[in-house]
Figure (cartoon, rainbow, N blue to C red):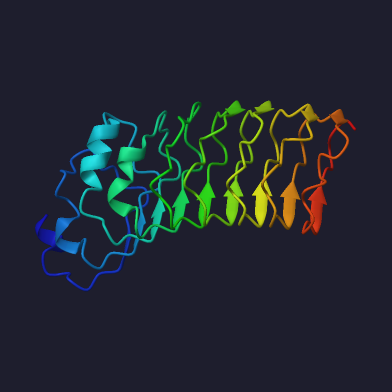
Length: 219
């Protein structure tokens, strides 16, 4: 759009609480070269936007470092949405959407990602493979979902994570393989679940753990 044509030095753009129904695939092209931070929280992306539409909207953002998609009622995401950011994105916020199922390898191209926030969605199961490729991730926030099951080895390749929040979910038991692979974990938040049982050696591999929050459960 014309309003961005002369803004060749723009690095931060905040469009929070602006409906973007009329944005074309070239909307960010004039500023894409230097844009590092983009806030698209509460911009009604759910209204008539398919994964393909969003992929096209992001097609020129090859240098983006931080992307905020908080509060858009998105019901699905696909790895093609982020493929152009694969060498740059370090911070992705997708809180307060309506995500229920996250497919295997959704984030596999985001090898530089450090922080991933998926809190306050409707995720019920954490499946093995959904975090493939996130070898540099240090912060994973999954609080406020409906998670009742974590498949074995879900976190297997997330050896750099330092903080994991699973607070305010529906977990009832923790199995010994639940946290396998989190060798660098320092803080684990499990408050406000429904945990009744914890298998022997569940936390055995978490040798660097400094904080464990289990308040408001049923142990």
